[in-house]
Image (tube, rainbow, N blue to C red; front, side):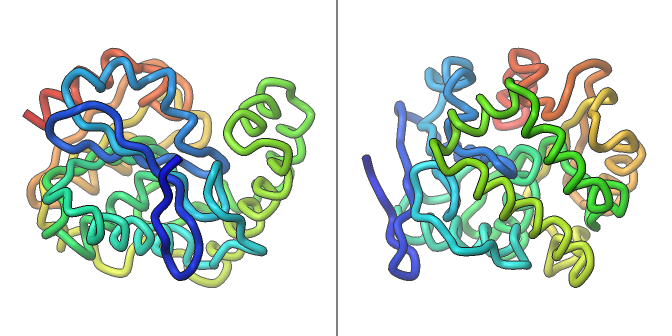
Length: 248
């Protein structure tokens, strides 16, 4: 297993295949394990880079998550890219990973070729998400498939990670609210926004994306008519095809 050292802590990463670099960024309460069943759709075309954010998967644990969560994760990615000498990379971030991907592109466009942001809520945290976060997570802890997903991604301490994440969603909404330190109109790299009309967390995703593509200079959107959150998983083959066309 390979690790990148960031502020004296170990970030797990893996590199698979050859070709143009494609960095996949996982969402909240997940790890790079969430991409394992999707790798076959990308590995023949790209050098795939996977990593686990601090506090997740095979990376070192945190006693709590920083409140500016998705920006802090972007700083981890930036430090990683600076030290890997990969040149400009393509990034696909899904769910919370989409917020990280956009933060990386906003802060360091010199490190990014193109960015795909999948299944995210927009520029600002939603009260509808923050208000039900604790109840939703407590309910999910009683659902076998959810617990299996968390165990697969993190191991035996999955519940601590989920609880840290629930707290940071609420804290971020109450004290920060904005996901980005720059307005998305300042984005200097091509962006593709993807999602699903059936996303159970973000029912207004199409309207949100329409307003964002008006703001982002070089951007487009694709919203699938079917599929659960995130679209990268529920529309896996169609999603991969659209991503490859965009990256080409």
